[in-house]
Amino acid sequence: MKRASQWLQARARVGRGTVARAPASGVLREARKARWLLGPEVTERGSGIGQSGGRVVIGRSPGGARERRRRASRSSGGGLCRGPAPSPWPRLNWITPFEIPDQLCRSQENSTSQGGKEAGTRQPLVILLGWGGCTDKNLAKYSAIYHKRGCIVIRYTAPWHMVFFSESLGIPSLRVLAQKLLELLFDYEVDEEPLLFHVFSNAGVMLYRYVLELLQTHRRFCHLRVVGTIFDSGPGDSNLAGALRALAAILEHRPAALRLLLLVAFTLVAVLFHVLLAPLTALFHTHFYNRLLDAASRWPELYLYSRADEVVLARDVERMVEARLALRVLVRSVDFVSSAHVSHLRDYPTYYTSLCINFMHSCVHC
Image 1 (tube, one colour):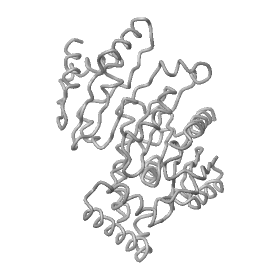
Image 2: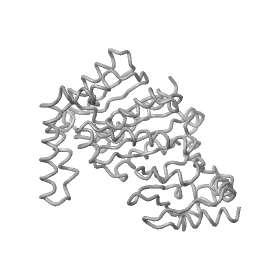
Image 3: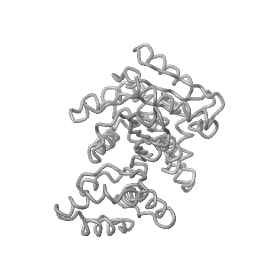
Image 4: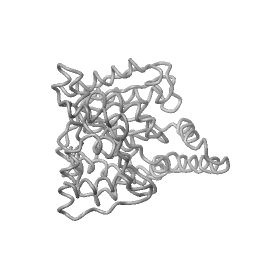
C-alpha cells in the first residue's frame, strides 16, 4: 500500500504534456486498491484525466480546508466518495481527446442527502455531448444538475474541425471518437450502469448518431442499456446560415484573415457536397438528420428548443419530433419561445433543471 500511495502521489504531480509510465503489475494492483481506499483525495479530484497536447494529464489532489473537511467526514462515518477502478493506465493514452472531470465519481453524500425515493434509486450514468466550440466550463453547469443527484457524469465535446469539415466532406471521423467514448465505460467498469445522453446542438447530435450506430452494430456495445436522451437545441437539418453563425462564434478570437478563410472554405464545402453533389454524397454518407429520423432506438426522448433559435430552426426539431412519434417513441418537446441557441438553462434555470431531472426519473422508473 505504501508503494501504491507513493506512485499515486507521483502520478498526481505529472505536469502538462507528460505521460506517467505504468508501474509493474504488482504495484498496479496495489495502486488500484489504494485508489478505492483513499477516497475523495484521489478519486474525486485526482481522476481529472484530460487532454493537453495529445497527452494524458492527471489533476492534483485537493488540499487545505476542503481536504480537512472531507477527512473529518470520513472519520465521523461519512460516506466515502469512490470512483470506478480504471483499467491499466497505458490504455488511457489513446483516449486523450476526452475530458473526464471530477464528476466521474459517485457522490454518495449527495445521493443520500436527497433522501427517500431518489436515494434508493440506481441513478443513470449521464453523458453530455457538447455543442461546437463549447468549453468544459460551459458543460460543467449542466453536469452539476446531475452530479448533485448522485450521478456519474462524463462530458465531452467533439473537435469543431471534425464537426464542420469532416462531416461536411462525408468523412466519418467522429465514429472513432464515438467508439472511444463507449469503450471508456468499460475502462472504468461502469458499462452495467443505465445510460442517459444529454446532447447539445448539431455537434453533439453528429457524435450521438455514431453512438447509436455502434450500439446497434458493434457486438461489444449491444448490452449497454440506454434509458433516455435529451436533445438541447437540436437536431437541425441543413441550415447554412445557422451553421455559419455557429462557426463564426467559434472563430471569434482567431485572426480576421484566418476566420474569413475558414468561413469561405466551409461555405464552398457545404454548397458543393450538400447541394451540387448531394445525390453523389448520399451514396456513401447519410446526413445525420436523416439518420436520426428513422433511428432504431426506442427509449424516451426529450427535445428542448426555441423558436428564437437562429442556428437550429424550430421547424426542424418539430419535424424530428413528429417522425419519432410516428415510430411510437415516447417523446416530449418543450419550446422555450424566447431563449437563444443553447441558452435555455441560462434563461430558465429552474424550469430547465426540473425538466431534465423529471425526465431522468421517468426514464429510470419506466
